[in-house]
Length: 81
Image 1 (spheres, helix red, strand yellow):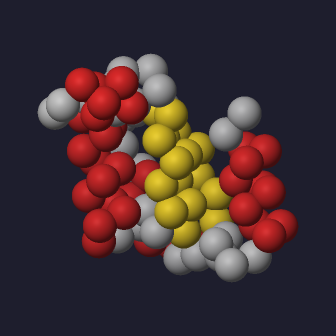
Image 2: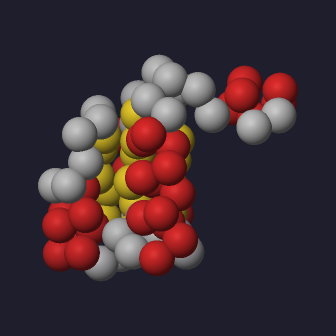
């Protein structure tokens, strides 16, 4: 990683990942978790999100919702605090 990425992706920081239950979102979550980041995971597929989150060993929160819904995004914002 370059210097900028090292400042962003670092142990103890929080990564907020939408679409986290599968595919690219899950891959990114695993990657930054390997760097020691804490995770705020967001997806509209509750079952898949909870199943994925149960495989993680890092500190994380799970929020089920739709990124196009303002109140769901507010819950994500409130949860990561």
